Amino acid sequence: AMGSADLHIHTALGDGMAEIPEVLAYVEEQTDLSVIAVTEHDDLRAAELAREAWARGSYKFEVVLGEEVTTLEGHILALFIEEPIEGLRPLEPTLEAIHKQSGLAIIPHPMSWLTRSVGQRTIERVLRQDSAGVFFDGMEHSVSPAARVTSKKAHRLNQERYHFAEVGGSDAHFLQAIGSSHTQFSGTSARDLRAAISSRETTVVSGRHPSLLQLGLGPVIRQQWRGILATPRQMGWLPTISSFFRRVRP
Image 1 (cartoon, rainbow, N blue to C red):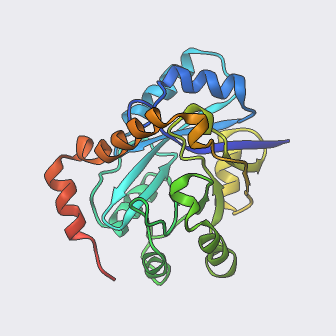
Image 2 (tube, rainbow, N blue to C red; image 1 turned 120 degrees about the vertical axis):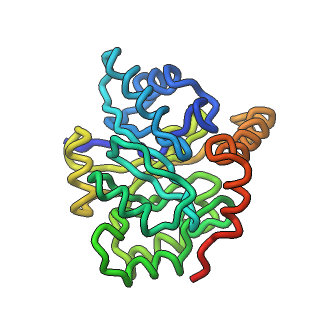
């Protein structure tokens, strides 16, 4: 059997627009997903609450813990973690911290200039390192607005040079976007998914991201504002602003 997973979902506890119960109900009723990850910015609590709510219900999918960590060089998705990963640190120690707790490190919206993203030079700098724990487990492919601008280039470089596992995640901030990009894998459990990512035997399936018309201009503007506030709300304004000046220049 083949399973499908959306490993990049935001809720109203972060900068998304839907509450956790709404997300769980939508995944159950409107999708065929077998695994999801809730991934808020620099916050693991939302994912823990999602898993607790999921455990109280009876769902046909599994929830894994995730966090979208803001590193000085861009966002990293930390998946299958149990302890929060600290934000606004350089990329290398962040990757080490993720792998120390046997988590997986995925590059979301690679090389995008629309949001804090890990760029090509940074990816290649990490590939040249041989320190234990400093590596990427996968690269996300998504039809989200942030990812779309550079997705062709990132996909091509991954095929030709990097050979990271290909991971599909919607980066959904609205219910309608959930599952718009997802990961296909052999098996149906979170454990099967993890094994498939580790052995690079995943494929990405992408549909369409909902349009501005479908989502409505008002909700989109409100969500953008929440997105701008996500990191400062979590990390404080001063550390957030100073992090832009501390970004490591390769």
